Amino acid sequence: MKILFEETQKFKQKWIWILLVGLFIFSITMPFLAFFQNPNFQISKTFITGNILNFIIFIAIFLLFYFLKLSTKITSEAIEM
Image (cartoon, rainbow, N blue to C red):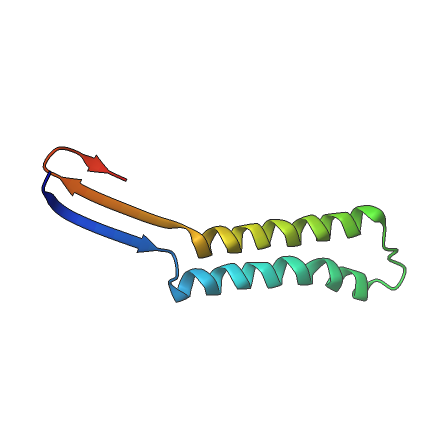
């Protein structure tokens, strides 16, 4: 089996990480901005739970993009991914 082409791609481009971090900061900042602008706002369990879930989801996305790798190998017999 002869390898004709082989390539590995990772998602570590700077623009992807800038976009992810920007979205993370935006999604974390907006609820607290509403909290500080309205002095009568009361923190509820829903508010706290929503922010914790938001944080966990973003950490999972960060880890996914950090460890994600696409490997492609084209041989004389098949295309392998």
